[in-house]
Length: 223
Ligand SMILES: *Cc1c(COP(=O)(O)O)cnc(C)c1O
Image (tube, rainbow, N blue to C red):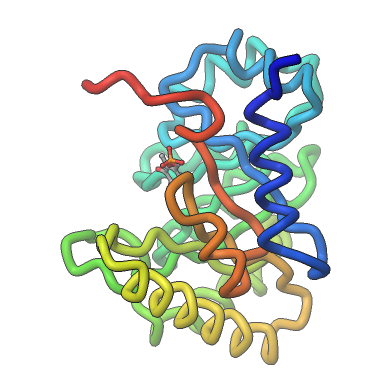
């Protein structure tokens, strides 16, 4: 019998977490067709991550009857906030107050609060996305003040350092920021970090959610 990659990844996640509360697997489905997502949903995977609002819209509509949970993990432009607030269950890439206001304004009341993670730029000097550590609390207060949003925690995409030690340090830094946030906002429960190449390392440093694309679906076609 052929082992499904989903079961392998779930096993690796459970191994890395040994004993700690379950770590959630977000299947990153950018560039993948709705049929590939449906195949994974058939195996029990319920949470999917998309990077682009427009690309996600068609898949979310096509799979509307499947009861899936959709996370936006890519950079969100303010002019896409309205659509994002309507379509997604989670937005993991909130990194500025202006976006908080737009998401709160456009979240349909019937959908209930939108789950939000603050994206932190922990160590990637080449990236313009993510807030700086000292900006987390102002964002957290803005989110906490919006009843249309629910602050769930932090997300990071550390720089892809070849040395595992550098990546481990970034994950550990995120864990410290998360623990600090939790002292002021006790309801936060999610630290989203770790991808196909390093999810075990991220879990060892305290990730509660890992975002895995390539290891589940295979290599993405190069652009
Ligand atoms: C593409 C992407 C992932 C998944 O990366 P893989 O290496 O394919 O597992 C995770 N998080 C974000 C923000 C991404 O853009």
